[in-house]
Length: 164
Image (cartoon, one colour):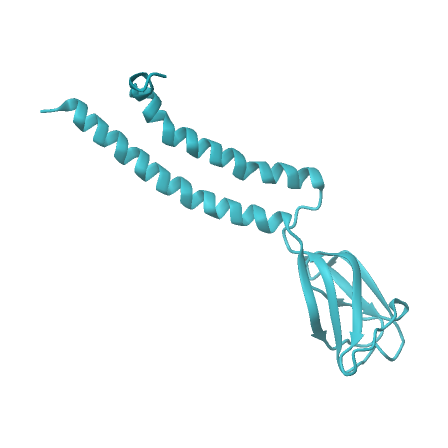
């Protein structure tokens, strides 16, 4: 019976199963981190505003930059004096951005308006330091996967046979 051969097969199986699990977890982690550090864009989102003074919840938790509001029927730009945009508002227990029409006809009670804006999606990491730390997670995970995959090679003496 070849114990050395059985040991090598066991190591190969362990590494193969470990790599499959690690890569599945890595794909999930990178997707979640990507969503937490990337802003999103809403383009020509059509909404019907309620009465003046009633906030309408936008996508995400905060608006980044300027929101563009146009009349849904003819595409005319509605000036920002006709509405108020607020980020990080809690409505029904959810952190959201809102747009509130003022008592001006082109927004309040309008049949439809189009909104275009960039926003921080739910779960977005607002601080730049937090985003930087979150981006290190996939990098460190990739390095750990590489070390896991190569450690049996280093332990088996292959490097000595290759002259290293």
